[in-house]
Length: 192
Picture 1 (cartoon, rainbow, N blue to C red):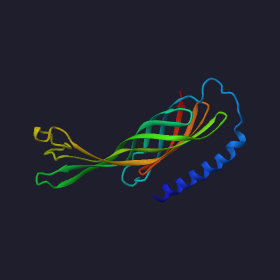
Picture 2: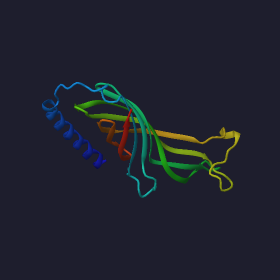
Picture 3: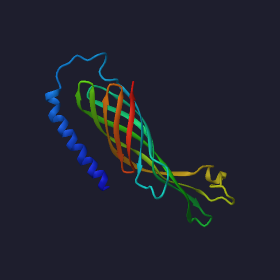
Picture 4: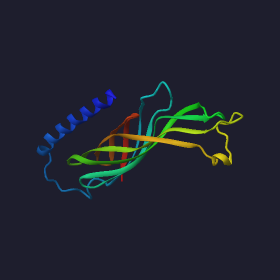
């Protein structure tokens, strides 16, 4: 959590500095073709806050649509931990395994500054992330015992996911940072 707060403070300082200098550098120049390309497809890779529990590196894939002053979009990420539990016949639970969780998020934000072909955006990320799955224990080596009593499925529990997204676009390339309560990732995107 300390790293997340430190990152937020650093982002605020950078944004404030860019706003101070953008008025001096932002002269009226005619745009070539359109505004910056309106669509952005990105992938993210980063570090996990739970390296000692799971070996998988966090990842994300997202799609963003931008207009003149704002952006919105969604992404899917592999981050955090999902605990797989088995329900025993006496209604007690055992942990079968821990895996990387999936998160499903929406993004929304504002343009911070635009200087000629460079545009910087800052936004919020909110969504849900898998917390645990539960199913009846199996007799054999299978993870779950499927029967009509349990509707042949595992039950999943979700929790809230939140974070910040900062990205800078120059021409057709976008670099950025995606920071949530579960991971911090570097983003690389292509504008279309």
